[in-house]
Image (cartoon, rainbow, N blue to C red):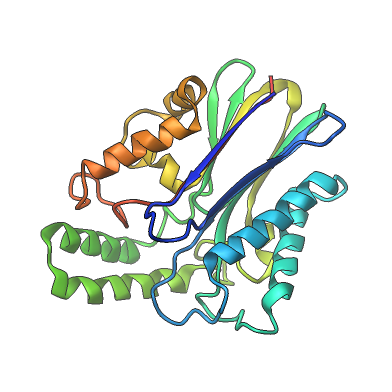
Length: 286
């Protein structure tokens, strides 16, 4: 079995809000992978004294421990328990009902000699390479399928940034953020979901199970690493996995950084920020 991981902040002056780790049991059979992408809030009150890096470290560690040690629980049950454990760690000091309480996207995978389980919540990605070499992305597309009115606000922000319209940009960005926040973890199921303080969100994750014999490799990526395919269109998912397998996870992040630096104003490739935290983990099972 081969494991290769890399994580790197988008801005070296700011803490990395991504988390990635893999656990391999001493028995030699199976393993667990957890990857999180912390949601960067506006620079305003978020109701929490700890911050997103603290949250992703706590939630990721709890999820990894439960995924690796509690085979009697599904990955969704592990996520619910990890969210509850993390919430308990700061509920006495922080307002966990705040709309901007720390939160994260989640990718998790777990395997043993018989099967491979997976879970994806929000816009990080899991690539599954089959025994025939075909690469299948496991994606939660709800964030990408925002209502037309919200997508229009997003496109307006990107157009203003590209045009250098600084005076209008702040107000347009604030309007877009408010619209997105209204859809995040909406109880009526009309929006998209992230792991925050409510364990019930785990039931909204995309989950599945495959026979171990049918899976050759797994590659988990935050959207900062997935930019190679989804933003810069440098290759499809199979091409991305091929780059990682041949050159390593660090090489993919370097390629993304090169593409980002070539378009510093986000004009050719519109995106929320010029550089983003990036994390990815490759687990070759066969």
